[in-house]
Image (cartoon, rainbow, N blue to C red; front, top):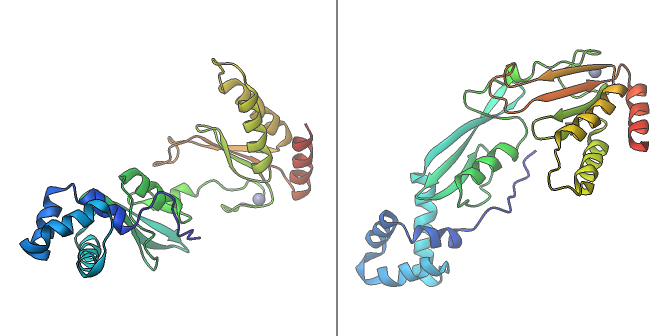
Length: 245
Ligand SMILES: [Zn+2]
């Protein structure tokens, strides 16, 4: 679902403060408002306060320019029911914004990476152009053969970033891991060993385990493990046991 909000965003006034430092943009502004109004218009941009008629003109000018003259720096798609809906991150002289079909713009980003990470996380099933959702979906539940979440999925865990991403144990696992990390009062704390121990604990409750890695799935950046139980009753029992320990 479209969350449609990002705390990294700024409004057009804040974006103008950045644009005011750009030589090309300042030249466009001068051409747009004329020599007489230019100094005042530039001051407004620097302060981020676009007041009065002149401010309104400056506002509309940049609203249009950012919309029409931005160039894509990242493009991808939302994969839904076998359709691909384009998403793009556009740049206009250091200002970034995310374009997606049928979505209102959330505002402007001052950093390309933040704009891209918003584009990648604001919707489900977002892929960069070139990534293949078909290949990505190849992990199937060994008990019901679905590629979707099912009642058999005990835990889906990103082993590279050491966090659970799905499954019945998702919350309990992340809570347990957070506690281990928080309580480790050692500057040389090596996360690998306790994390592997925690995964062993999950493994002992599971009936089957599958893994996916960047080697098997192009475009993936982490190693994932999928733990399954053979029935819903067993997943529930495993959750109870895991949470109690
Ligand atoms: Zn299943």
